[in-house]
Amino acid sequence: MLPVGPAVKVTVYLNQDTGAEHGFLHDEILRYLLTNGVNGATVYRPHAGFGLHARLHTSGAGDVAGLHLPVVIYFVDTGEKVDSVLPALLAMVTDGLVEAHPTEILKNISTSERVIS
Image 1 (cartoon, rainbow, N blue to C red):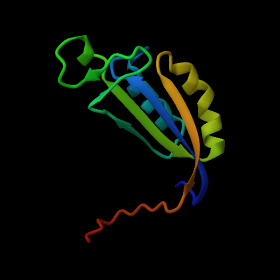
Image 2 (cartoon, helix red, strand yellow; image 1 turned 90 degrees about the horizontal axis):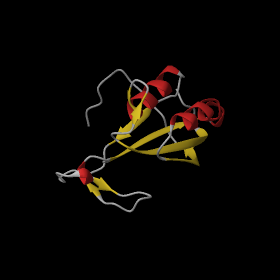
Image 3 (cartoon, rainbow, N blue to C red; image 1 turned 30 degrees about the vertical axis):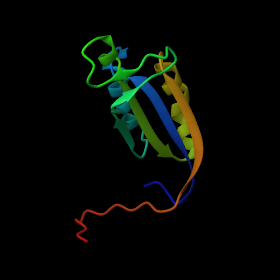
């Protein structure tokens, strides 16, 4: 479990159709993070976006604008863990953007019981 205190938040911006050796890059990155002990990661599929080429891609587009929808991967972990996974992660990202920001974990709790409020 990720301890309370300083941490690093990493964000990876990709196109959902960016390929990798074994399928799509966002899936391969998620498997890599899981296999290498990152505390957790989330893939978001935004409705629309644009990048370096300044072409708007939207989920409702029927042409090429609808093919390259954005995907965002977030994960937060200790600085040591991020430092250990970052070199391979950066090598995997052949088309996209990777950023990292210092952050502070204020609370991290996990329970097997269902919480009803």
